[in-house]
Length: 442
Image 1 (tube, rainbow, N blue to C red):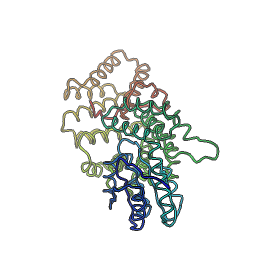
Image 2 (cartoon, rainbow, N blue to C red):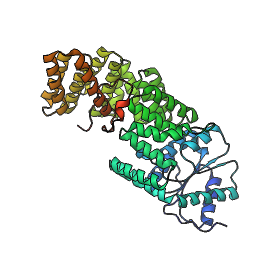
Image 3 (cartoon, rainbow, N blue to C red):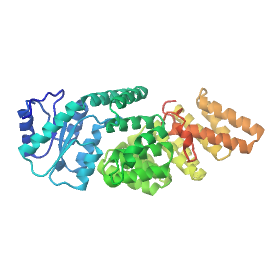
Image 4 (cartoon, rainbow, N blue to C red):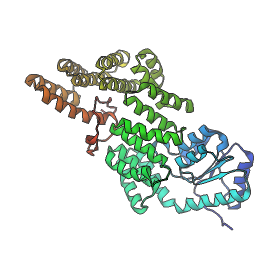
């Protein structure tokens, strides 16, 4: 017979079935666990999960697939770290429940009627895992704290140390891959994920690995590959909102706005208030020429700086496909609608200048860089680009200018994806880089 269990944080029981709650409570009390939390709503459950990052979770599929997926997705928070043992109860075992279990690393899954013996067995196993994995979970919590402080370098150091102590540990490997993607080290991330994505013949691919592989390819600018990985993961579990948004962004960057819009709409159906889904919808409206409708939506969810970034992304996609007139029209609409703040207007003019460089219109590029510097005289990148264009105009080396220019856009495109340059991996991208995203940190 199992002895008493020691817990640092109270277990969380989230079920709409009174008999499940009472059965789990009885088994916890029999194991000398006297404190537990029973959130009644999804939002209350998510709040408690954030408050107690190391508590175990017992959750019931009777809340509904979308509800359960949103709760389990929130466990990772904004810093994508999974740290707790999870017990999922279902009445009927289906593909959807198995997919959710695989997606979120569910430790114990019970299908069928609730009986005290089975619940006890699962609860004991849950806390045995909690005890045996404490070191790795504590390390992952420290990683999440480092990410929250913006110290991704420390997060990487901690993850390498954790993986050294726990070779092949799936969650640690996934979090390290996430860090590598954030740092722009795409080749290293892909190599780390390969084992989990490819697996052995007959194995079911790791769904988190597929998602991260897709996100890695998206960040690296390999949009077809990103779509392939993300669609494979979506087939396994179509209820992950973050993945739907990533897939929508991959379609959007690949100049497939109708497919992108469908993914953003699916994400919004699952989570009506999701910011990323609304931003995606706004981008699709912009490239469709529905600027007023896009502005009405974006003004409700974004400030001028983020709106400028969204306009810029839509303009980049248009110009990448050769629709320079449409891209420039979007910049002009952005200046008219949100260009009252000097820093925002300076960056919009700067990005227009980059677009004109890509369009091989150096005189117009110079005019944009001059306007940017008129608004913000110390804007270093505008100063640098202006000097380069002036030198090119003076010398007229058309072929050399185009080569140098493409290299410059490789640097700017990496920044546009909010990634850290310097790894060298970005140079391996087979796609043609483009105009930068507005620099939120400039």
